[in-house]
Image (cartoon, rainbow, N blue to C red; front, side):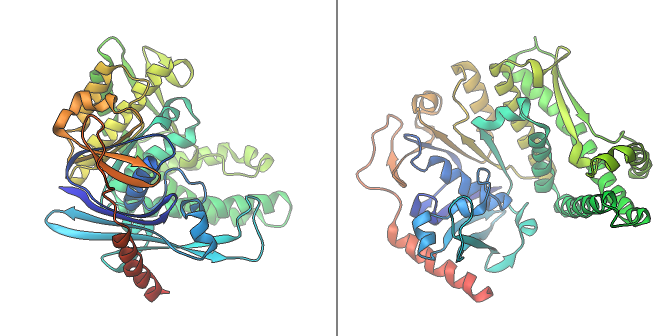
Length: 418
């Protein structure tokens, strides 16, 4: 059992000072767009995977006015897990520069992660508490480019096993080094035998990653098929096809042999276009219904249902592998869905320990949960208590003084490590 019991935010996007308690069960955050609902879930997901799910550059999460004044942005969460308490803090310290980037910003950020006051890397944080995020953008898992599906697999496996994340990090560094060498070879500034070392490194790490993905897909696929049938009915026959750039095999050793053969076959292409042509960074998987590739032929409704099935399978996989339920987050993921399908989805999701939902339309959820959920209204970066009918309390649940205390406490912890 693991759930978030308290969230304190300082200068995190438009949430300047926020300190709220949370509980197991379902919490619904509702209100107009661009008021802070998604930012709340962004902060919670950040505590689990160490990165924002919507910021291309981590400077974006720091409130602009605060950054100009050199003030920190802080995400501070308290996790109740197996009878013990974890306090996870992710801090961003703006560092002013004399020149500005193309986006007009004149600062970078120094990021630091603490777990119970001890400094941790992102890799050490991931897996402490697992989360699954359902988002309106998940339709791209079906209809978008392969990079999104690779990211889905990588986040899933990194949360399941820290060794996978470390291997993935090593692999990407090897690809970068090898690509640089390929460019030097094309320019005549390196010798061909220098590639041997990086080929060996690429094969070793890449084969292991591919094998782990292959194993995961064996478990994920039947879960996804089952979840999809529950959501859409038995008329659509779903297949999930893992498509690695290296032929699969029954062992890592056999995969390494296949990898070397694939590299040899791609040698001419790599001389023409100096980038590594095969490996896990080229993998993909297809979703096929009744023989049709849904990346090409899915209707919007089919794509959304498939994406939901993938996320439900992800939650099921993590719960099975880690022995504890993930925190489940719905960020405006219930729109464009008929009430029957929405109810089936919510019934599945609420089997988990803690579920947090954002919506602009309270009617999408209160007809299902009634008084069985906590309702909170979000506007102008503040959170107010509410009932299921949208009657909002007189004062916000967030407390500015508590937010400032969190800022001082966390800021001291970060400064001590500098």
